[in-house]
Image (cartoon, rainbow over all chains, first blue to last red; front, side):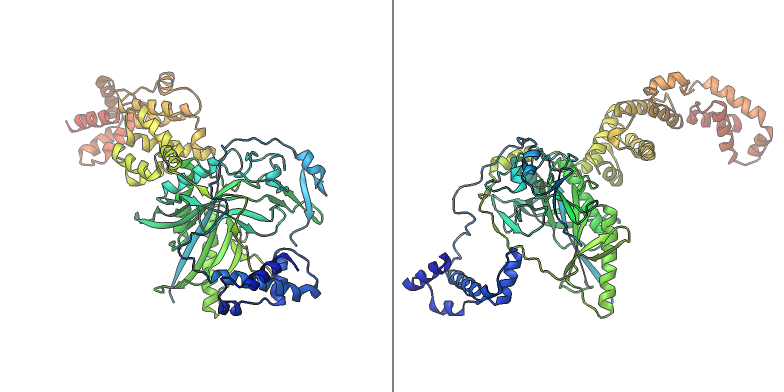
Length: 121
Length: 478
């Protein structure tokens, strides 16, 4: 059991705060949608695993759906769990050229450029 | 059917910071590939972005100059997509809460009226690197020097109704960011580029048509061409029974047309979410005050002042305030000329601009300094030289022969105002042209011009034209 399934099943077990009706309406993902999500994340997914991923991801969405049912109109959206503002740095150049070191671990370089498989047809 | 064009512009202005938006690497243009790409820019594991205060302040300045609300709290988000010149797999941008929003810009139209264009928002984001496809076999070269360069994306409301208005808006914003010193405005180097959202609808309709987005247009002329072509394409398409598809299109400058960018349909799904590496950005009053105190006189205010202080026409004032450098040059000339604003404006916009254009020089590269030009204008006002001779003096100054007094002395160009000397020349001219004198006396008044010309010629242009005119009349009529 993965960590998400575990979390959801635990919430289901103690049944705290989930309006039942909302839960039943929860959306369920198709295998095609899982394939599309995997493509966006550039993940290779085995066809045989699709139904299981679809089920797991749908469970997560149900979990989110349950949260969506909460009354949050008076709550300011949380951008970051740490309640403090960002520190700023002065606009100054502090980095030196370290191209040699960086390119020493690159698979392929030429004329100072990193080379990657051709990206346009 | 009569169609109305609806345009909204998204302009990316590269901010003129020394270092990148989230790292201390240099942003200088033209360096050897990847020599200004540090661990943060490369997206190496374990690195964290730290926001550049300079970039924040520049965004606030643009906000203040366009009447935007500066958000006391804004948030950075990740825009996710895969491309090799984006090493992290996401671009750090702002999505729901941009740093400034809800402002406006007033553009001048050809008929002399002004029009308000709403500024929806401006947000901070990082630029991507560059992909080089030419000169490699089966591979693409990646230069990440540009990765992490701060950009301000300035989004207009769909208030623009023609390609002319779009160009006017773009020029106005271009001038503004350069006045503010937040962007060098260099369009060839991509420091100021434009995406245009274009749609058409039947005139009178209140609903928007489906829009196409034309990406990355980097000159005023191309923006006009791209929009004109796109509008025509959409109208033709609809009138022949087709439908406009919402898509991204590229402008082909060689063919002067737009074409669809994606061959296969792949919907953009950027999956924005708040970047957990960056805490919310708080812009406090102190920072806003600091930015405000550093604002220069803005183009509209300067233009108004030029009209009031120097008595310039609105047109002249707007030409002279088009760039801060030109405005500064003009003011220095007017100062050196003892406050003769109109005369200074005529010379800066006439003789000087003509010479600069011909030589392909920018106002900052003028071989004639404002002090030297202003000094010559003083010689016009104190009648040492005539306006006509001044053109000769200007040419000599342009060629590096020194200031006006030196040139006037060296070439003996001082205006002749001695009545006796002028009268002597007039007498000679009258004696040499008895036929014309007879015709003039017979009622051919127009011949006065001929005599003035002859006397000016005899004086090699140096006689005071006003005096010549008066004295001639006296002699011929008397």
